[in-house]
Length: 112
Image (cartoon, rainbow, N blue to C red):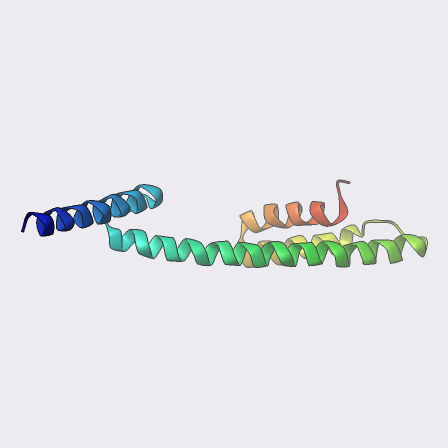
């Protein structure tokens, strides 16, 4: 009987330690909330990986456009097009969208 009690206490202690660790890591106050947050964070990480991949693809496409523009005697940057892109992001995401678009444009074309 003592062995069973010790095993149960050890299991409870391990579960409690795991739950405490998860709640500390997520800022949640319950194990259930910590699990939900952990799952949601995994989805966000996967979305971030996809977003990064899309931005890398956009950088490559932008380089093709710049090369074609420059080799044909044009300028590296088309400011009218950039204004369209800024407006599109602003309309979709509000003021922070403009900042996001500026960062993305800088990644794609470099600083002007």
